[in-house]
Length: 420
Image (cartoon, rainbow, N blue to C red):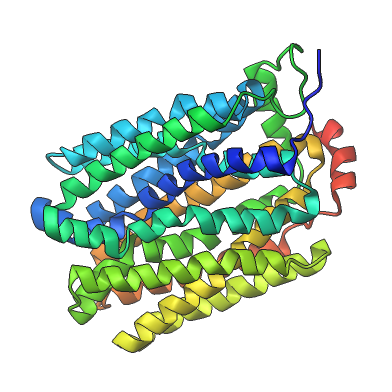
């Protein structure tokens, strides 16, 4: 019986890059709605509320599965969990490419969300298991940047393909690329015993694993982390992944291809930002948490300015500013890693990821609801949407500052057995 040990960097990097390919496809699917929105509205007559439901369904499925994904990785390891789930993303993209209405589109998005659910958690957990702790924020930021190739694909390239061949061809290409990513993981990522376990050791039961997740919520500082994680990424992705394309088309009359160009530039800026924030990650928890809160307040201000200024130059410049600041989210991965003992890190990252994507689903659905009713309130729809996002960010930042703070991973380790 052999204990699982960290890999050498030379052995670990090809595996991490293969896992990143699956994450890149997840990035493509979570941002595709911004480019698909105009042709879907034209073909199926989708209302803003239906469009929000379509975009949110991926994130709802993705977020809801995080606890089960965490349990799967604890019990069966990263390789088996990713390989078992990701074919559903291929099937969902294929189903979407032949959709006949909003119901089929939502079903396809739900399948894609379930299939992609392990993608990013597998990357972050692999980094936590196989690289030094002091490199966690930097490497997480680097993987976000590399995985962002998928988000870049849903800018100009996908817009060009949709204009040339239609949106169904775009979804078919995404299905084929997803299959290629699954094959790459199958080829490059060998089986490793689950983290913290030993090969051949008795496995934890699913009930014990669920109780382990419950122990996280008995630690008071978990609630501030969950509240913040439910709004910061959601704000950026609701803009880039849903409303940016429609806003540029309806507010300013831009074509789909021109909107794709803007989305591409916003995506590039958002991909450069995380590794920069990760490189300058503060060395202590207090300073890191202050920086996270301040960046959230700043982002709320940028959304409020975008809501009120409403000019084309202002909208593009402020969207770029949001993308530039959005990289601070990588600091929260380091915050989670520092707030829990090693035995709880995998589950803590799983809960954090769940909150992040359930937050995206809720924000995209809620902003669709707001946009559908804004005219009745005498407000331009995108003004109402952007102000709603700014308000959510303010609530998240205030809760993060006022709710209990983590003392240290060592203190959490002492509290965990009592909480369980």
